Image (cartoon, rainbow over all chains, first blue to last red; front, side, top):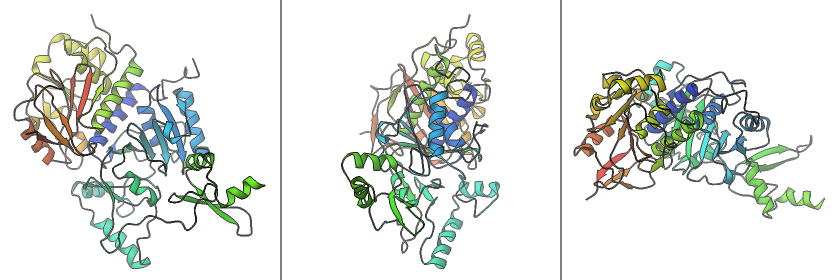
Length: 291
Length: 193
């Protein structure tokens, strides 16, 4: 039975899938609004993407091709185990190529390659409530969303400016969706925020521990909060990727030795590999090839 | 006495769900529902397909009066297990064939919990060939034309009132001929002139 015999297809039972599917449909109809759902215990700890896994399990079908990334990388523990999980319980095809995937589950990055219509990006979300660190009470944050009362968030950003001279928030940077709900884009670097704006792909967000699902349909306005005199800006990197020479991509710092040696490489491993295969070489990549 | 539900309950439900999801994510586009199966009681195969996909014992449903009969009640109890309510304001899903009741009698959700509103599933004679409507909003790059048949004359006015309630309001799935089209509450509908 291809290893799926012990479980229902995609692990979850059908009643659970229906419940999650209903939450997803309402989430799509109310972009940016966090729909409560009855999150299940998953065979992995909270913080390992139980929300994203439940969303993926509820939408995935036999013909889907799944890609899973963790901080942009296809080959880190979280990504490898979730990919193996679905290969086992749903017997679906998996890939590391962004272009080949129909569903991409992600922990905190959006692939560099522009997503296409028909692709679904599933985010693993730790804390879905953007106002939570400003107001711990759920009753209050719910009221604030209901009344569209987001002054507190602007005060927070303003305090950043007062203290640091600029908006110091660099990840989980709050966005306003379709001019209505303020939403936490999950702890993606703010570098990725512009990719959410009017993306052709459907974006689904699952927070397992916090029991929330929310969504951004394709072609939906996603605007990062800012001020006229302190407009939103993404990170810029001084040097291109050391391996593939890519510019305008998000880079990770890799420590090379204990004498301060380091290099910056693409956080999106698939993007980096594809560029290198196409013949692009960065500073250190060249040296590696010459050795 | 009961007809079969989905031929393959797990994968057909998944396929139908993705059709509904795509339909709501890209308003106005049509998507094929799961492979044809026997209908539930006397309600249409399209409505049956959506009912099997999204309803169960957790979801009170409302049926338009012309769909309500003993065979259908029993079949719904057997296949979906969804409680049937006579109050549209209590329904999580409403299954409708024939005249569309006014939208404001359904559950419109609350400002705190807009997700608690009713989703209307409406069987129409056809999803094209009717008078042309123009859609705009999330999920649509710029605008999109649809021409479903069988919507009431004042539909655009009713929908506009529904749209003004945002984030409250009902969502609609239009079904016909094995296909589903979604009208989430975010969509703005205008008449083409």
